[in-house]
Length: 79
Image (cartoon, rainbow, N blue to C red; front, side, top):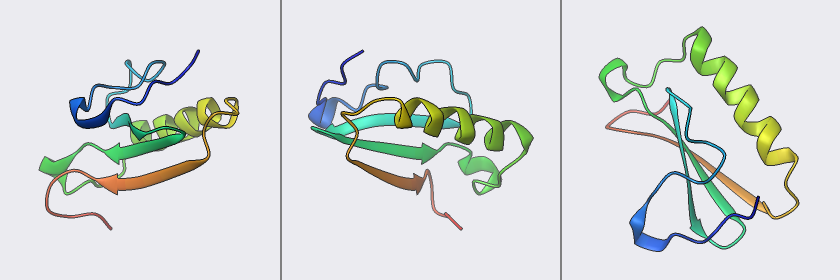
């Protein structure tokens, strides 16, 4: 599956649609932005979040197109 640069659209990148705690975008060619998406819980990581992080990075590792990954948190806090 090829990732397509989505620019300002910020649609979820292909292959990452089923994640509940993470959002994955492709803001530029060969770049993925992985965002913790629990702003109501200040992006605290629960079991599901850890499982999704592992699954997400397993997918990213399997694609040679990914050259950089940005990790951030939604809302006002990311620890």
